[in-house]
Length: 444
Ligand SMILES: [Zn+2]
Image (cartoon, rainbow, N blue to C red; front, top):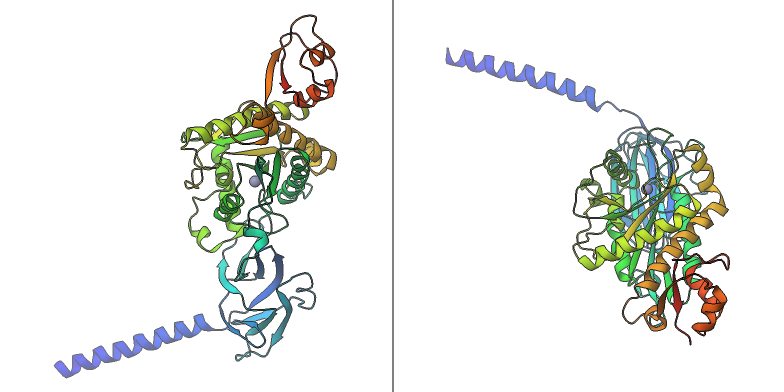
């Protein structure tokens, strides 16, 4: 009986194996994938190339030198994208072209490169408006000195890091009229930089200078490398309904963010990591965009500065836009525990609100927002100058206006021009209010 039972077992196994092979064969039958789009995002330190695919990519790649090339084989894939103009504006890639692949059903793409690069390749699952993607980052091996060197600052300049939210693959919020948050934030950031650079005693550095994605950890490390004293992150809000509007300013505390909105914000910003993509960052979904500016404020000083600036910025924003929240909002987005740079995050308005979406694309309104943020930051650091800064050197006294005192009376008393008092206090007219506290710059 033993041989018989063994035969049955073998026959069973044979049948099982045949069945499995059939299933495997059925599964392996060429599922035709296709490349439906390719986007190229040059940044100061890297170029990101994003392939849009109909389904999850199966790929292999290798590098060649003399000349430098990157070869990617997409298995069972057709290419439906024109390659000719893709490398036109990129400093690292000379040409995209196809080459004959080993398997007929595959597509072999060749990227002709200017030199050899550090390479990361990773797939991204569908998120937001995007489907399956394959992301390639070409990093410069030696980072350009321009980026890593300290900014040229005069002794005593307060260095303000300006972080325009989102960028590149990550559009941020998208308005009903098609406004991308990433564009609004960069426009305001650039305007703000101009204003700060014009101000004696201050200097601004942009964390992101163009339309490309910078992952969150990189943003704070850039700020640190650039010796940033204060970091302001610029965003535009969105909500699932068009009602909510107005601006808000966020600082981080250890307290839990309790409002529904803040929880929702955090989730939304998590999504932006998925859109923007980033090797290790994707796995760590607790990273959030808000967190970058909202560094861990374990240091009392840092927290105090953040709140101080937040209050000053709110006071200025109030003059030009509705406020969504009248006080600085706390968020528990303590992802960047390593950072002790005081920081705020300004939500400049709601892109999901029709009127505010329009305003946010309007250059004049962007300028007004930049002015408000600039004045808020400046007013704080004039009142609480950093040790050794230019503001500390010039200093000012406080003066509470009493009845009968005019601007010219005060100018005479303190031996300083009316224009200087007006500038220090950001006054539009010569009118003073009784009880108003003025900052009087020190003469000379
Ligand atoms: Zn945002």
